[in-house]
Amino acid sequence: MLSVVRRRLHHLARRLDADKYLFLTLLGFGGSIVITRLYLELTGYPTVGGGTLHIAHSVWGGLLLFVGGILPLVLKNRSALPWAALLTGVGAGLFVDEIGKFITDDNDYFFDAAAPVAYAVFVLALWVYFRVRGQRDHSPRSQLHAALELLGDVVDRDLSRDDRRELERRLESACSSDTERLSRLAGDLLELTRSGALDGGIDEPGRLRRLADRLDRWADRHLVGARLRRLTVAALTLLGIVAVGDLAVVGYLGVDLQDGSTTGLADAANDYARVNIQDGIGVTLLLLRVGLDLVVGALLLVAAVQIARGRDRRGVELGQGALLLALTVVNVLLFYTEQWIAAGAAAVELAALGLVWRFRKKMLQGGPDKEDDGAHPGEEVAPAGGSSVRQPTGGR
Image (cartoon, rainbow, N blue to C red; front, side, top):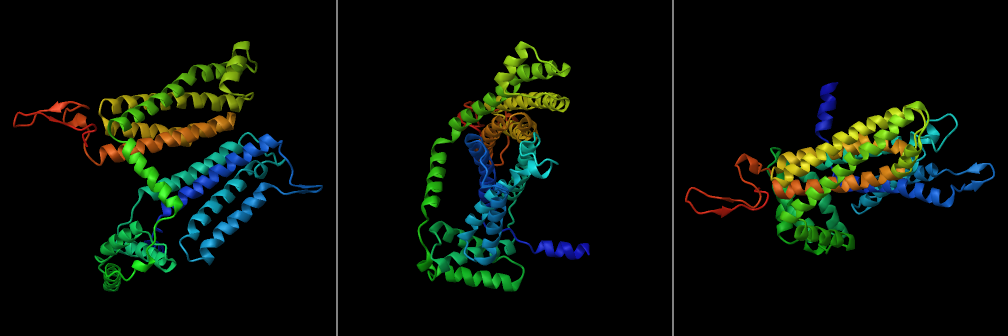
């Protein structure tokens, strides 16, 4: 039985651009929850229906989930997949946003644990995205599957020139298959592509693709080298100071609330920190969050120092670990006390994580840290011949 399951799983191939579709799903999921809660708060939580009817937005979420799920089943065109991903994310967000009604006896939308549960679902989806984004299947079978997806765009006459180059690369890789029928198919398609027979189906990218390409080029011009290093160090330092600096305020609140009452100083600090916990469970969660905040802040500050000193690999590992800890654990506790601050913190931490990943991609590239050879940013290293050669920043 297990061998049959393994054999069937072995034949599964990842869809081309799966990480992009998952990103759209995440964008729709998180955006729909934030926008819905903001709209309801600004409008006084209106009721759609009236009388005995109350059409909750989870109903609309279920409808969008149905549409998003059925689109790839009905339409073959690859252009339908981004819409399916976005609609699925929005539908899931509208549904999960009302989780408080589904886990309480009195259908309490404002249940304190509802926001943390919704965020935990988002974190789970984020983990799936990271897993898919970080894995690449370079087997000939997977490459041929991807090439056949790209060939579908030839029929729709919207294969871009970049996609054509990608198609040739995928087919070249698929030609190395040990299965003769696959290698022959890949070889024939590659010969057909190189002959120019598919040129009539090649078009320039659309507006969104051109916008994304311009953003990539802007980042390649401005977020590189010493500037990228300074920006990464500054971001990690700022987040670290905020996490550690919040310790005194939040810690004092947690201790003061243990006796069931608050002093005037605690009330003032509560207004500043937007922490409003009045029960024992809340105090416990608050103190736990304080301890984790301290750990995250210390790791971020150490990571900033390591990167500033040229120990990039160690700094990236510490910074990435601290940000993932904040995103997956600390923010869940923060959502229990203040959902808007938690949502803003999650957005900032995701942006910082993306910056750390860009730094890793541009500055590490699999090379050793400078500390391994004794060099530091901006130093000159004398080779055996006696003349000095300036090492580029990052030394990668």
